[in-house]
Length: 183
Image (cartoon, rainbow, N blue to C red):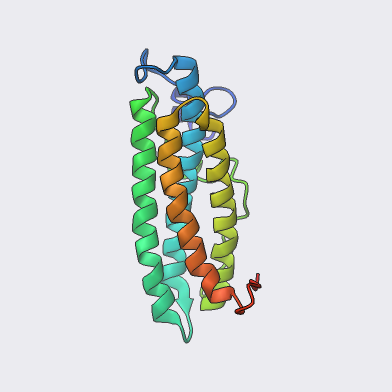
């Protein structure tokens, strides 16, 4: 195993497991474990997203530099807050959140961000693709947690509202006025 210490918080399938003999009242340990596995994936995505946004913030250049540069910082801070809320929810449910770098891209459903120093539109297009994956994964997590844990579902729904708005901010730069988005 690449990270031997990870064996303490993962089962053989690479998912977070509940290590404590308790969870929140009204939720079984089995359901808490399932929710924690879903949340661990969301934690990985939020940590990945906030680092990707910061990377774009540092590397964007061109005529609209300052607008895009300044648009990304609030997104970074909000997404970092989402990661913290998700990690604390995992802990409240009786599991141990894993926030180490080696875990960030584990089973990520979208491609790695491959844009370095580039113009605003190139970064915006790449970030839009990242948000496609993040938003879809968050919506999937909402559906998966809905029947099991409405508190977690509510947290993820509120986060999805913000994530979708951030993606809209990006898409506004790509839209031609007729509703067509330049991908």
